[in-house]
Structures are given as C-alpha cells and as structure tokens.
Image (cartoon, helix red, strand yellow):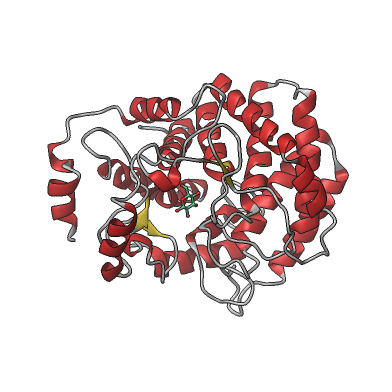
Length: 375
Ligand code: BGC
C-alpha cells in the first residue's frame, strides 16, 4: 500500500478535523484503565486485551508526566498486587540455576482482573519488570510520596528476581527470540535497578546494575555499537532504551552514537518512521509510532529539536480521523507479503494502541518542557 492511499482511504488523514491529540491521548489512556487500575494494551484488538507490565508502566508514566498521578498510582497498586499474588512463582524462580530458564515465573501480561492467562503466550520476559521498577520510582519522585509497605515488599521481590535471572535467555520486548539475551531487556533491568538503588539507597541493586552495564559493554559489536542480542551484529530500535529512558549510556556516549547511526541507516523509513528491526515481518514490518517517539526524544536529548519535532509530526500524521494512534503503519513495509496474512489472522493493526499514545505524550511533554519550546 502506498502512503497516500493509506492516508486518504484507510485512515482518512487528509479529511481529519482538527483534534487536540494531547487531550485525545489522555482520554484514551484514561478510558483504557479498569476500576482496579489495570491498563488494557489495546481495547479493540483481542490479543491485546490484557495488561502488560511494559505497556502499562509507560502509560502510567505518561499520565504522571501530564499530572494525573492518581491514575498512575492505581496502576502501581494493581501491579503490586499481581506481584504479591504471584510471590510463590518468584520465590521458586529464585532457586533456578544462574543462566537457566525458571520453570515458574512472572508472566509478562495478565488479565485485567490480575489473574494470569492460561494460554501459550511467550510469557517469560524480564524487561517489563525493570521498566516497572523504573516507572514506580519515577512516580515516587514526581509525587514525593512515601511508598506503602506492600509496594516495598513487591520492589524487594522484583529486585531479587531480576538480580537472579538477568543472565537467563528470555523473550525480548517484541516477544521473540526466547533463546537469546537481549540488550534492550538488560537496559530496562539496569534502569529499574539503578532507580531503586538511588531512591531507596539499596547498594546491592546498584552492584547488580553495574554488573549488567559491564556485561553489555563487553558485548558491543566489532564496530562498536550495541547489538540486538548477544551473538548478533544487527541492531534493533529498542536499543534506544540504553539512553532514553533507562540511562545506561549518555546520549552522546560514542557507543550510543554508533548504535543510533546504525539504527538510522537500517531502520528509518523514507517518511521518518522507525521500524523495530530490519527483518521484522509482523504486519509486514511497518514503522512503529512508539519507536518514532522514542527516537524523537533521543534527538531532543542530543539537541536536535528540529528533527524531534519532525518525529512528533510524523506521529500526528498517523492519527485516525478519531484521533487514535495505531501500533504501526502499513506502508513502507519490510516485507509487504506479510501484511495480509496478519490481517487475516488477527484483524487490522491494533488501534488505538495505548503505548503509542503514551509515547506520543512523553515526546510532546519533553518538547514542551524544553526551554526554547515553540510547541
Ligand atoms: C509487542 C509488545 C507489546 C504487545 C502489546 C506486541 O506485539 O511486541 O512489545 O507489549 O504487543 O502492546
């Protein structure tokens, strides 16, 4: 599908009435939260009618940034209850041999009532729990609140869980390659553990984070960039997490600069959207809005405000006439032959994807926070 047909016929972009996408995004995030605090990943896409620790933390963080702390807090309460309800799985995982895959573990996504689903979803993923710790600490710092006792118990369980399992292969943040150790997963763990170490003065978490960082830097590619996983030299756009938001590498660190140069060369489409990785064929492998937002934030951190605004505008152009943001776009595909098979299997691309709205809000906030803001 070409870009003009997509905009005019499918998304109706050129007929779109003016919509305040910030307000629309906030209302979509709020509408996607249950009374108990869970956020649905996408209300209209059956496979995504669950709450992921990864998606939901980014959603809660966006609400925190836009001053809706009570909704963020409700999510953290929900997630803490899920962790405590699954304490037995965490404790049995702590007996696993280092580097092995535990027999029981925390699932990556839960039903909205907090119960684990019994399907064969690729559930052994670790990044969501690092992201969760990072988000929970950010929430505490933004609100200045003291954590309730049960939050501390869950944080303690999760830091032990991640310290024990970080050397185990796991599914990555795209829920693929279970036999690999993924750099972006390690970045999320680093961000969570450093956040906890600094906020609660838990030195053991800082020591684990330092070990993780050393391990990552021992595995840069022969030409000096971060790889998607240990044992490859290809990149993945989720490597941007090394800087934004997890802070393992400064945005101007030479390893980060080389990583981003590779991402720009391999993963940015002709219209500015960012693909996950070069051989991605999920819905043909289009550009993802949340990755384009992440890239925009990275550009802003490097002082390239003009390109950060272009990234924001590209995202805005993908909104449906109703102001809904999809997960990815169906043009400039890595593998166009794989678009229709996915539509037949799971229906149209997930839209609205709450994580896309959260990432948009985060970039928009970063741009408006900037001293010489014009938007
Ligand atoms: C993505 C995950 C995401 C999930 C729900 C999957 O297709 O790969 O990163 O958490 O969708 O949005």
